[in-house]
Image (cartoon, rainbow, N blue to C red; front, side, top):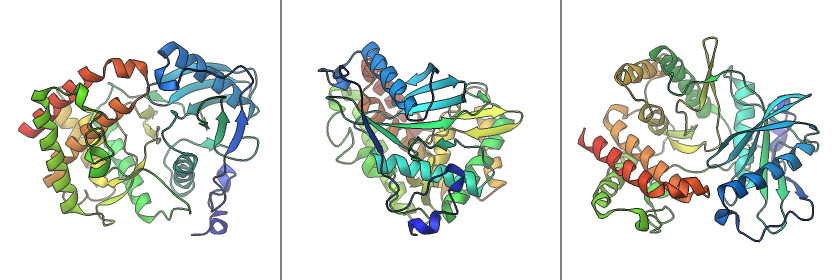
Length: 362
């Protein structure tokens, strides 16, 4: 589909993501912002200081002044709540050397389409002073940083307060996302990550490249090897036809949706990409815990099937995609630039290996 054909669709965000629409705004931070230490070698405090300076510089591009920044998270990306006279917003700074501008722009394009085409409550990206949904700042001596600003969404992060009734609505929301994704015609260019076996276990992964080796105990290697084989077999059997594979959220666990007055709101689409529908379901299921886990899983699946049937092969391959989710998380833990994540990496890998053994044994 051409960029011109998209103009009527995305007027709600003031931006058409056509062939030439993913150009980013580029600015250079003020002199003195250069740091000799590479970002991935900086301390946690130094990274936060750097991110705060970038956030303040970015807000000027959205004509937001005298704002109060409250750090929400600094795990992979860095996210701030912004309180100002103009309102409340969420500002997200992409982790350096991860996703490029066209890839982030594609996420924002899908969000714009979801807001236009459905009644789902999803984040609304806002344009900067150049009318663009993505801002790039160039700190001296550092890689460019990509920033997006979203309108604040009211609601409570569900977290551990998950209930079967809420999971039913999460299932409905996910099914609606999948139904939209099946009919969504992406603009060109449109680039999002592929959550497939190659990304999880292939040559470019932490397994194929050997980056996991210093953190992997000998007794844990068989668990990851078996997980790799199970995931590969399941994905090959399902194939990548539209009945099995499409654009998915990829991270809809209980810390990534809000609850307000009976409504579930999906947030944090930053790793949305191409993957099997079952993987999306597995992400939500894998995060469930506690004595009501089975009841919450059943409620989630009931909500999903109230909108559309379960993906083909779900019963047969659910376990494989629970393993795939843990493989994704293993890659993220080891690839993270966050010093605290690095400190916990070996312990995290050991816990993930134990979780994998439990799933395989079921």
